[in-house]
Image 1 (cartoon, rainbow, N blue to C red):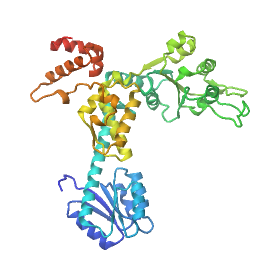
Image 2: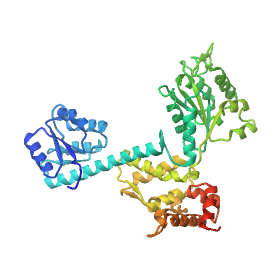
Image 3: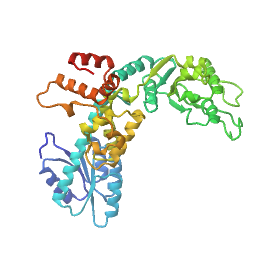
Image 4: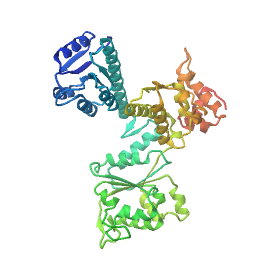
Length: 454
């Protein structure tokens, strides 16, 4: 077995003869084996870290199923193989459904055991590496749950840091699916209010007749069906942060009430005799053009000015294509891990098509697409054929992996990538800059330096 670090296996078996024989077999292959005589003893050892748990199914006190449940909770990347006796096939199938890697019927075939152990240990090593990579990506390119390295996203990260620990209202604009709530949460988590509630309400998903009650609360008997008093979102977010999402959908008559709450820091629940003071940081988000709504008398100008103290505009995914590889990598790791799917990689050609697509649904659509591919896949690598027809029918982004040839310098590769991008979009510098993930000004400078002509 060619491994620099011995793989540790926890062997749980109440029969000492079988336990010792299995341990000797595994140790002969270079594994480090820690033995436990029963489930209770195994529980005390779990924290030491193992590449694999081999356990008998039927044991007194803490049986194999209970041990499996605890391993899944405390060490979710650690595979579990069950030993089952005659007549325990039904229980073994249930163990598989509960997350066991596999099961072996007694008496155990040594070759079959070693084969399964190798597979399980390899899976654990891969899962550990993927988790470490995901952590590395988050540390290097992430901000909370937001992943990216584009200049537009890095600028937004700086805005979040600057505004997070203030009381100022923030207006977050962006197309649907760009991550407005994620940025709102990032503001909350980087503020001194982070230990207090973060509450979100979406004005587009609540009937107009209920938004008043949902936001500000009501007293018993305030309206038909109000059989009990209820606190609104402002009170629920007390001391913390309230995100009013899709604020452009808020009815005009409620906008004046919201404006008063912002100015007085007091709410007036429906049917209440007096106002209630609230300490809440207010964030608002919308995919609508509020300035246009103000011009059309569909949104109060004074409320707009109160909300637009700090303005953050999130770019659509098509304007930060250089972030797509990082997002795809993170989504594959997350979705494959959660659903126990074999997908680990994406081919350069498939990634080029993903980068070339315009993603009208933005990051949300990209994640849903990757999830659909991963859960339906039986292979380790996503290829062009796995992509939806509307994506593989588009224009892939030229990349070094698809244009580079042995002996080419980095400058030659970049020049060829720009040439192919211009060719793909009929020499539109705007479209080519979006495809390549660089600014139009940078593209113009490179076109001139490389002597390329439109």
